[in-house]
Amino acid sequence: MSRDCRRFPSTAHGSHKDVSSYFSFTTVVQYKCDEGYVLIGQSRITCRNSHWSAPAPKCKALCQKPKIENGGVTAHKDQYVEPENVTVQCNDGYGMVGSPKLTCSKNGMWLPAVPKCKWEDQMGCEQVLVGKKLLQCLPYPEDVKMALEVYKLSVEIQHLGSSPA
Image (cartoon, rainbow, N blue to C red):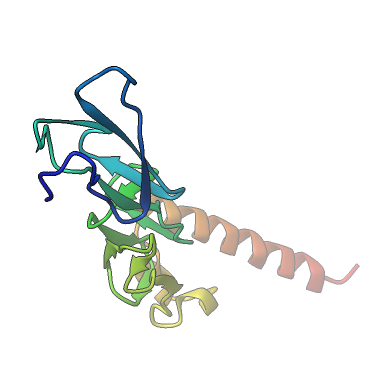
């Protein structure tokens, strides 16, 4: 970093301006980040006798919380600063297509690409309506009970429909 107070340290993805008072012997520089970036460090630094009070702040990219249909991320924030990481998880019955580990990159994008959560065909579960396979496809006893009640009703309705009038 330059020791000359007339040369302001710059920061990528941001701007700075001299906000020194006219009669002061101290140079004061104010930093501001571009849209989509957040300031890390001190927003104002001063220089006196060719010595800066702190290094120039950094402007880090912001990534928005990834939207995952039929899934989500482990952390509960709306914005992340590079190089923060998140882990994607899919809901029960859904498999991941892509990488579960994402990193907020310098351009505000998630790398690698945000994965998708795709329904997995669990031994043909979505097509099973009757029989023993039904019990294998439903994870909770309440679901099994409900499915059996619906099946019982459907059999009764069929029976009523086939009865002679």
